[in-house]
Amino acid sequence: MRVLGNVHRVQRARSMTRLQLFIILIVMPVNSVLADCRQDRFGDVYCGKGKCVSDKQGKVHCSRYRFGDAVVDRHGSALCGKGRCLLGKELDRYVCSKIDGGGAVVDRYGVVKCYGGCERASITMCESDKGT
Image 1 (cartoon, rainbow, N blue to C red):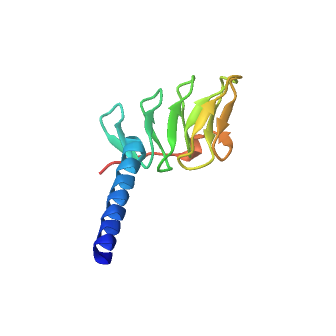
Image 2 (tube, rainbow, N blue to C red; image 1 turned 90 degrees about the horizontal axis):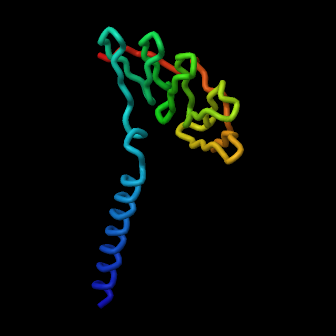
Image 3 (cartoon, rainbow, N blue to C red; image 1 turned 45 degrees about the vertical axis):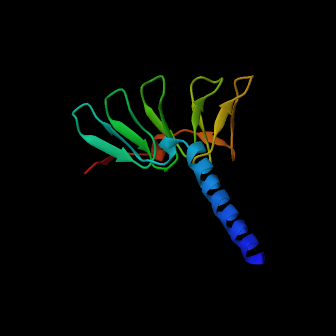
């Protein structure tokens, strides 16, 4: 009887582990797992660790952080951050989470709130590596 009880506990633990793994994979966003690539205006491919965007001149810029964000401002310039980047009430600057993959949201007053604190998006947080 004891042996059967232990077998059932082991089987239950395995099924719980599988269920937990399944839930993690479902909840995790797809774009946070994969690096991004994009073609420039000449058809050359550029890839980065994080999200990629094209600026007003057609140059590709990617976040140098695996779970980072890349945005284009109102002037057509590319900016990147470690986490999610959003435009706040200032409307002239993007603000990003200081944490790699950190979230951000605009509150009801138009102020960007970030997980781990906020910092300004910057071109220095971007990379442009040609794909091979």
